[in-house]
Length: 227
Image 1 (cartoon, rainbow, N blue to C red):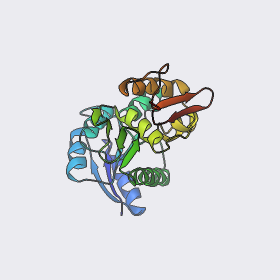
Image 2: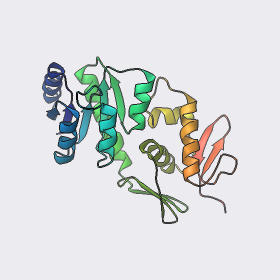
Image 3: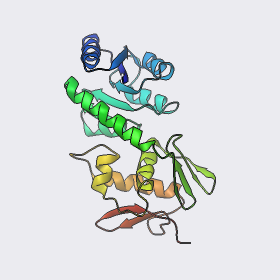
Image 4: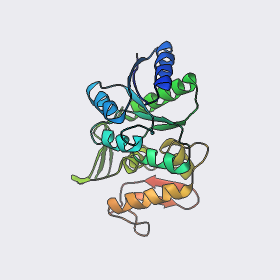
C-alpha cells in the first residue's frame, strides 16, 4: 500500500483527494499548509507527496526547495497554476511531475504509479561510475576523483540520466520527456542552459568537452574522458 501525503489548503479538494485515493488503495494523510506538510513529510516518511503550490503560509515551490534539502521523497505538484514559468520553477526546484488542475483521481493515481516506478528504477544501481565521475543516486551526490561536485536538483537528474547510459547519444527531446517530464512541449533551450551549467561544474566547456559530448543535430552523450 502506497503512503501518500496530500498537501492542499482547500478543504473540499483535500477531502476529495483523500477519499478518492483511499478508494484506489492508497493510505492517505494530509496537511492544510506548507509547514505542517513539511513536518509530515519528514516525520511521517510517506512514499510520495502530492503538493499544491497555492498554500496559505508559504509558496509551494519554496516548500519544495525546503523539502529537497532534507529528503528525496518523490513529489507530484498538483496545482491550478499551469503557466510555463510555474511549471519550470517547480520542476527545477525538484518536483518529479506536474499535474495541472482540474484532474481526475485515476489520472493522478496513474502519475503516482509512474513516478514510483521511475524512482524505484533509478535506485536500483546506487552508484553510476564513468571514469573518475561517480554519481550516487541514493544519496544524490556527485564526485570527480573524490572531490564533491555541488549540483542543483535538476542538474543532478540530468547528469544521472546520462550517467545511466554511458556512451549512448540521448536526444534533447528525450531529456525533456524523461528529466523535465514535458512530453508534449518544452524548448531545447532549457536543456542547453542546464547542460552549460552542468559542464561548468564538471570543469569543462562546450568548446573543450570532457564528459559531456554534444552530437550536432542529434543530442548529447556522457563519456569517459580520453585523457
